[in-house]
Length: 406
Image (tube, rainbow, N blue to C red; front, side):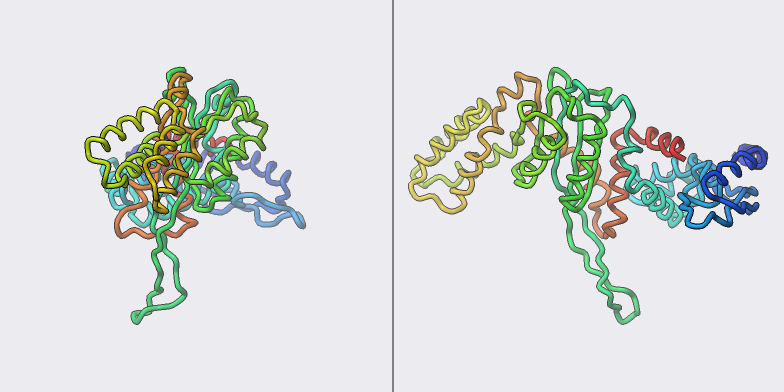
């Protein structure tokens, strides 16, 4: 590693000299006028800090807009947070894979990467901020086009405890904050094969936001970019949250998808839970053997797409239903078109929302629902993206896209 650091330092200084003329011409073309040499320090793959002299744009043409750093080498080499791509690739990968920044730092040290715990945290936040508003561009490639594919969209909510400062201080002079639970909303986009299983050649796409409008907007950006209007069929799988059914189908129609190519599916396990609620609250005159019989019959009807028979039977059994029972019956009645599970199975579609339940658990709960951790909302939203891109096996694609877009 010491030899690698030594060789890299020599090559970086040579490259800096070789690039000076071409970078200066590019800077002048974009409105830069006075370019001077300044030292640039950044970390190599091992965490070793190197320094080189590179051009810095000191002045601009009047009213010229400049994107990115004025240090031309920093833009050219995609240096983020004082780190080279090879360094933040490893550091942030470990930070998102590990349950904490402390464990990530231990893993990095074991494999010879120099970085402090606070450095891991700072660099992770820097990369997350750098990727803001660029998720679609960074996490997709041309082969992700959804033309003529059978697409599944899952959407649900998780749990994260946030940190909201009150603007006051305690007796020790420290800023106080509240820690309310918030519901981050996560969606996943996948491609189904003929058996209704996820295509292994098409890694899933995740997106996560706290705000309902923001998550629908992000989903729309992805679907438009991936040409959803040319998909063969789109299945929406979810639980009973009304906002999902109200918003996602309308979004697809706005993007040019015919309603005949949209299939809405209520998660089978979620529907079964309502059967158990209804049978469990049957009048006392219905004994245990009869209740077991009703559970078996109702589940059979549900799978066959005969929820209407369940609703009719429940209305017959309950002479004076409570408000809860009425609510459960209404729920099944409202979702009758979304419970045609036999048809879904025959046509190679999903019957459950395991695709999104798994995403919620792995992306959110296992990393951002830890006891004693409280997150600033704008920070953790960026980290959701980094964690999701890693678990979707699209990490290297993101790093390559970052370099290409420098």
